[in-house]
Image 1 (tube, rainbow, N blue to C red):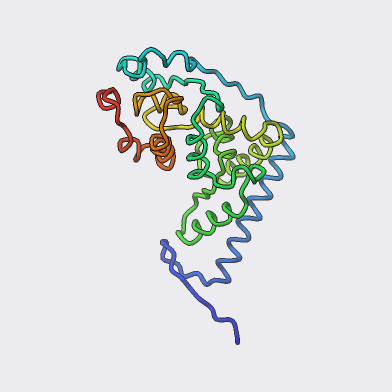
Image 2: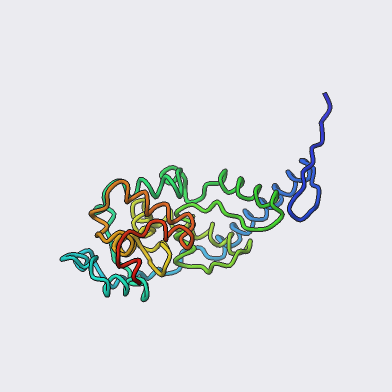
Length: 236
């Protein structure tokens, strides 16, 4: 049986057969890997990472999460609360890893199959986004890079993620991610998000609440309003 050519229409209005699509995908991935390798060879090691937290879990005690002035400050000033991974209910890291990066504990910083799938979707859609970022890649972007959507930035994101995995163990990567990730409304980290949206310290999150906060990470600006339960969140 001979090869049957199949075509599809991208959003740009251009018909692309499956062979051409495969070539484009292969070329895109090759370019991405090459750029990542060049960046890796150029950087050699990770830049110095400085982490500063204004508050600790002790600052969220004595009803602080019910104080609307305090809660509003968390959002307006992007105040971060350091929350040790060991202090969180197990449901929190479980929910975040499941929704954001299900292969987190197995990969070395980059999930190449997931990245390939994201590139394939970009080609089908006729525009460049290249998602597929792992938790480690997201952390590298948050700590060291801008949010511009270019192949060069993606390559550097990959290189930094690989470097992070060599320098830090998985628990430290996940802990730092949970303390740095954007939860929308100017909130950075699980501590500020739990206090602001749900009116409780992160150590007191229920399984349901943990999954609610993890869902925000899919689209912080769009989904944060659905999760907000604290009267202070609605008042600010």
